[in-house]
Image (cartoon, rainbow, N blue to C red; front, side):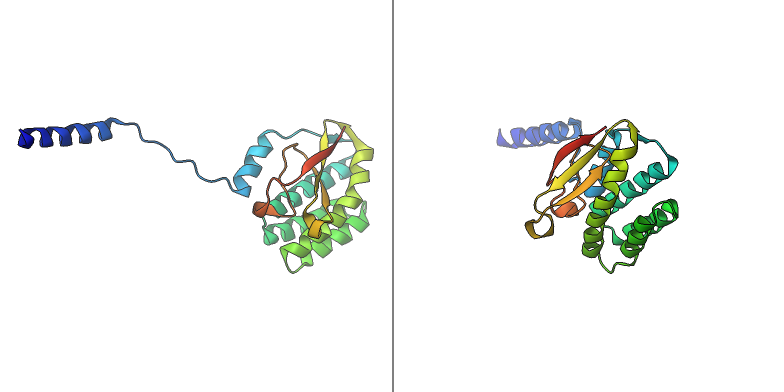
Length: 175
């Protein structure tokens, strides 16, 4: 009897395994995939002049590069920012130049914090449609905290990247 039951059980087991649908294993989220997901939910903001719009676009690219902890991408993006702002925002262009020449991502992040202080009043003063978000991470810079401006309400922290990707909160919606 055992000789008959064992092969039948083996066949049933093989058939049941073969008939099951293949389960997909979810891959862990990375800063890059989360930024892609975030971009689907971005608020569309418009500004009253083209130079501010260009500055905002380049600022967002730089923010994303820092979220991804991609210093080479941050370097390239800050070079593009310097070109985009030209003489209109020369101080910002100088700071973008410093970011592009920074030796590591932590220095880029420090300079990005300074950049945020410079661009915030410009964005607030010239937004004419949509909304943007001032966000804050209390853990940045050894507990001193750091701000950034985002085009999406979801937190993607440029100061820690994948180490603390969602650390922070929206402290102001700018319209």
